[in-house]
Image (cartoon, rainbow over all chains, first blue to last red; front, top):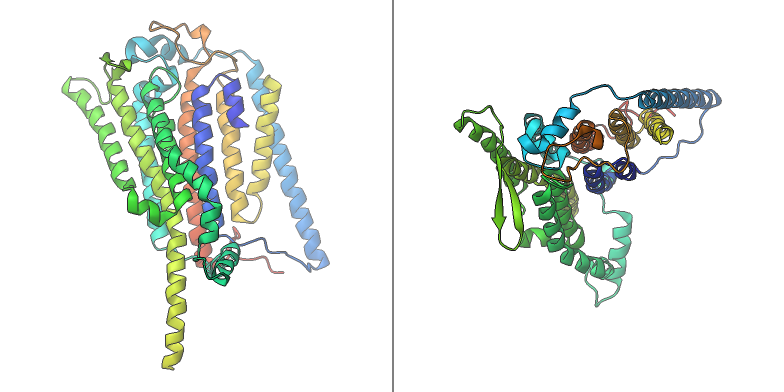
Length: 330
Length: 114
């Protein structure tokens, strides 16, 4: 819904980014949900407890409605007033003359406010490294340790029939989607590169391209499982992140060679055969830095969570194989 | 147009606040992301609403500010979208870790005494 209203309110860049980011967020939340407990029914409340609970609910509801109303009224009253003179006019007038791009939003991001964006990708990198570090020592709660119910049912079925290997049910159910996802991989990569290259002049840019590329990787993981992908693709998220940050920083520093302040950009057009004129601004290289950084960070976060399932089944298996030997010893 | 967006922002905020006040952590995450949608739309609205005026110059020349919607809030929201994804991821992992350590997913760190 947010995405549609961005399209409606003439913000194509935001709509694109929102769409891919929401896809990734959904995958992330689903991966996380695996480690959270099912809803526990709270029954048998004493009468007073129930009343207190209801009172809390009522209070929360009132608070939520009040905040919602306040913000709606505030937004409406601001919107019906005419806009004051802001600095936006400067950006519109100078986007092409000083920034060398016709997509004003992207020019603001990678040129006028590049230092801000540089800080932002650094934040993104720090967050993903923190996620990675937190998950390395992660111990899930005891009751979410065993293999999920559905997987157990599938394994039972597979074990019951002699011709089937464990995991066959999942594999046959996933055959068509998996094939589609594999074929989609190069297509999504091309689409991401296209968005990256045209970002300076048309909707697109480093962020949306980066997240889209991450989606391409994640689809492979969903289709074939972690082990299959890592045998075939060398996904090195930390390498990507490092390269991205260094490229972005180096572009910034390169401005010093020409006696300009940090992150000043220059631009010209390069006529590439087959493709036509490609805008060749140094801001473009900065965008490529953002692109690499965003891929690395997103993929690292998702993979770190996805690896938990692998690790926990491994520990569960070693624990169950440990137990018989321990009983034998005693 | 304005009133629809204002109501949308209001509904997002209301549901976001309601979910943040719930005791279980997953609801709090969803609530936070709903709130971030509301805030993003609010920031966008601060540039006033225009339809069919995407901030993309039609020619390689000086732009006329009256022709386009305000690009500045859009640039700010674009970074906010990516950052809110990072925040959601970090929060999710922190609560997974806290659940592993405390054995409960209540925000107070303990089940309410039944």
